[in-house]
Image 1: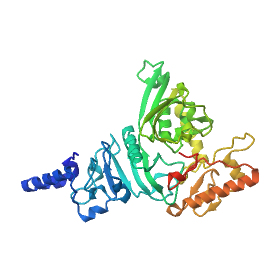
Image 2 (image 1 turned 180 degrees about the vertical axis):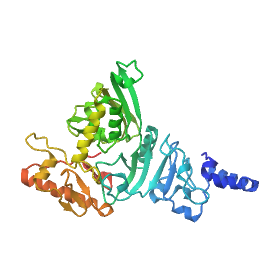
Image 3 (image 1 turned 90 degrees about the vertical axis):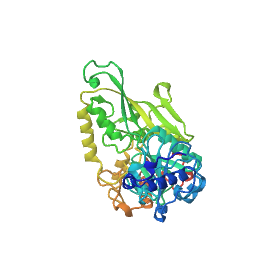
Image 4 (image 1 turned 135 degrees about the vertical axis):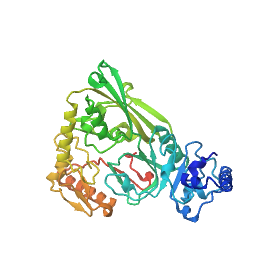
Length: 424
């Protein structure tokens, strides 16, 4: 095991002690004992730390560490695990000194973080562990780590269609922050100084990239095809998973390929030209039926030159802003629109039933758009109240029309083995 002394001890402390040779010797001796897998001695106050910092290489911590929820610094046998920047000599965790957290396989496990901080509904109990992945390598390492220890694993982007349990999540929640945009011109390249002025282009984006941001980015460069993304409060990965859409358009209309990780820690790529992505269906993708899907890490879209793209994206956003409660704590549309062309939209059905403004505890049907349910009371609103509101609305619509609304949101149980077959 290796350890960077500068990352273990605070730089200010080292500067103050640099003149003291005897003290430097003691620090060196201390680091050497740590290298030899001896117990890392920390003040009692540090033992209350709720952070575990891991590096990807040979991630093999003992199961005891995970089962007891005790900081790794308290354990003598580290089993080849590299621990970096767990604490400073002054007894505080220095996040800034953690080397590239979420990158190149380095990751932090945070214990007890509320899932309400990971979703747009702002509802949910504590997660056993939470982490961040900023690249594919780190995502792969987190998947392997969770698989190795039999931990439930869940990847979230912005959490814009998730309802966590009031008890939280008994596993590892990974926030997908793989955020990049790569421009891939493929045909009829322009000879002007502005490469986006003509031709057909492919844009590859990270799974953690805000889908709304990608729509604005491409439109401003006069690429047409993703203007409908403006105002959709999710990530590229979430948009692909749900086949998000608006104004008669959807992700599958522009999707070329998808890169994803499975629970066995392998990276895959499916391409439309090979028929692997399947046909476009309303709010459906084959990823929703994959039992071993861990995360969507990137997607590539095909666009074309569109002089009116900047204006179109602004117009679409204005319409969405005027017709949807974007400023409130919501999770987007709760129900899918009916497949039956004879029936109106789910929002219209709820509106016609007189349910706008209907509440259960702190959960309410929006007065602006009836297919949006709002968390009106912040931290006091519970998942149980939202579940009750969803169930009541479904019952009313079923009695009045004979049609059973199908939920578009994903309910995340405390333990994943409790999930329905439709959930991933």
